[in-house]
Length: 299
Image (cartoon, rainbow, N blue to C red; front, side):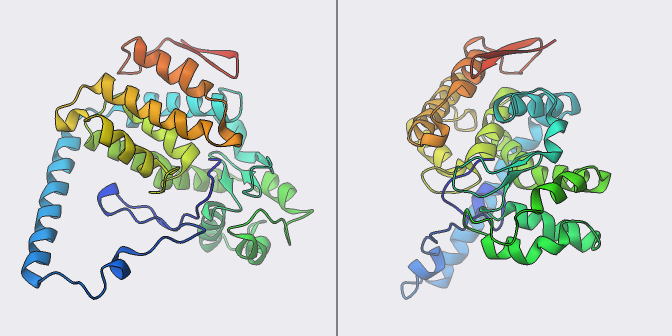
């Protein structure tokens, strides 16, 4: 939600993930230019990757629905809202819009889309294609100009009010839900299932995806996962689920502590880590947890 340092353009399953940052990394195809492998080796590599992806997908299909089950998905939104908006009523956030001073411009909506990280622009563009007369369409030129920055140029003073008004429209709330699922929820749950993780692990991935974004850099979700994999094996590779999740949370906590905007790690320390130490890998209710010192309960 409050991502730092990258610009998202597209999200696809992790084995073929491509992330684009404000400071663009070298594209793998360019890095390999002039040193192409023989065609036979390239074909072997492609078939091997395809076979591995197929195995991962079959393994994921055998995992129970987990966080994607309707009640668990509702719980996931409540857990995230407790950390992001200090409430269990996550639907209140459809109309939320504020510059929180994290260098990403305006943060808005149900999952904290940002004017500086491309996802808010993507949402408004997609929504406008289906509903061209919406109240945010007139801000598209300005949203394109400020994309990748913390600027409000062309957005003030009317954009916040326009967002709040549009959030009263059911179609815009549905659009926010759909973009949240496409960019954050579905990829996180899919990857967790491939890694052999149960409902708690799927939520831990989702919450990390929300905060850090689906980037492959040091602070992005896939970068954090890569670092955890260097220290522990997930269940899909024969590892212990609790030990792997503990390692992932350690890696994520260290990353959060490195950024002033995210130094409060209570969403890990007094929430996710508590569930893990209780052995609640199914994320069964009732749940009691704390974020920023405030206690939350779901019966």
